[in-house]
Image (cartoon, rainbow over all chains, first blue to last red; front, side, top):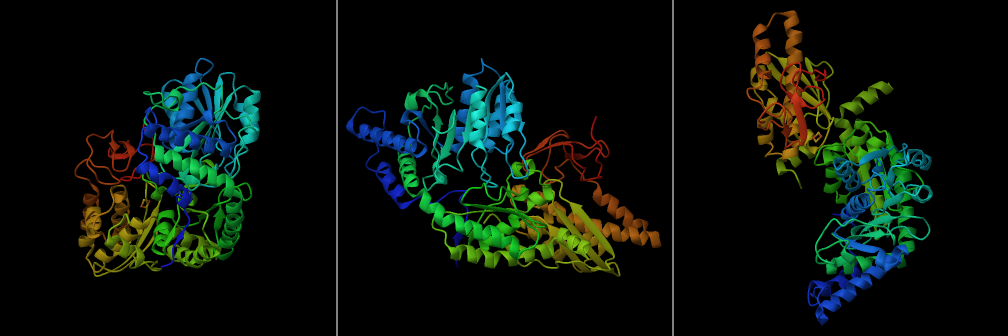
Length: 392
Length: 193
Ligand code: FES
């Protein structure tokens, strides 16, 4: 059977050169980077090399990079670490309503500690209005968090503009770059950002490793106490192989990003333009232009996402959905609801996210098998029957 | 795959999909957990279900459940069909993942609602009290359990671990329902004061 992997947002495949770079550190180069001896020092050097590679990807200084176990941990560290370090200055936080749960739930945690957390609304494309940020900043505001791009709908935020507003108001600005970094160029010197998170499995690195950039001179309260790893800002024996893999992936991304985009964008555009042409009542979610190069997301009216995913899986196609039925907690995607979609429409969520290596044949195959799946599921749907009757 | 073979088989080849234009009874239920919908249509002759059709807007489990319910109920008498429980359906399907058990509630409920609808229409014509009674008896749960997954609960103010939802006592009928939601037992939407 033909297979097409269209689930970048879940994980990208590990690049062969990344795997190769990691291998010695899962075997012969097993040293603890904190050891003084030669085998420890070998690991230490590898980590510092990776730090330089990651720093170079976003044009930061190496010492501004803290390695973490994931993008989620990086977001937790930014939100909690900054809020706790600056609580003498104020207790008000502004988070956009489509942030990743690792940001929103960190906000909930901080609320329990007495912080005041306010969410910023988004428009129907999922964008935060920078003027809204300006209006919402209060004298007690210490931190604003707006992501670079959203992985469920692909929308890219006006993060630079928002960063400048925060700088002007002397408020910290955190941005979640997990979906963005490694896929589009980032230069932390070009906009005033306090912290930025990223994760390896979104640009052909390994899972279970991420990083947080923290601007030099920014105080940060550590969340994991213990040793002196990561400059005392994140204790715990390092995941050397993972960090080496992240570094190698960053190096690769810097070099190849443009090539990847060149190949992926036409495929994404083919999907975005053709699917709604072939099937009625299909809505593109997120912004039509300001979106991630690898991202095509839709709501297919009258049917439910999990049923679509199961059918696609049977055809060898891997995708994602933000429908309530697909989530373990049976809750509709907070992103789609924040964008003003109603529950029934959000149920029809389907996300195709491309990876380097996808071909035109993959998209052609998807466009061949997906419409009949939709037709079949719609035939079963009482909502579609109502819609058809209403049309008569 | 998260589902049993049986579920996948029914999901891929659902039986009795569609609508009966001149149905004797129609039952529609909404899933209070995820907001999905299921409609059952029945045709009754000599107290037997001679035709059943359904439409479902929901997940793979919901589709397989509706198909299975229609298959089990086909040809059964009204009394027999009313005895079909959500548990039976889930068992026939070789089990369902825990957080999908609530979808199996939809199936039997929608069928029972269609039968109720049929009986009501009947009783308008002829007073069929016996059948009415069977229906109301059927609706009374015997012990306190989560209305969405049927898991046991300790008190009325509880949290169902399987469904991951907070429950409260319905001010109308006194049974548990999802906090702030429409009551799945009596349909009350009144909020608690
Ligand atoms: S119908 Fe929503 S989870 Fe089954």
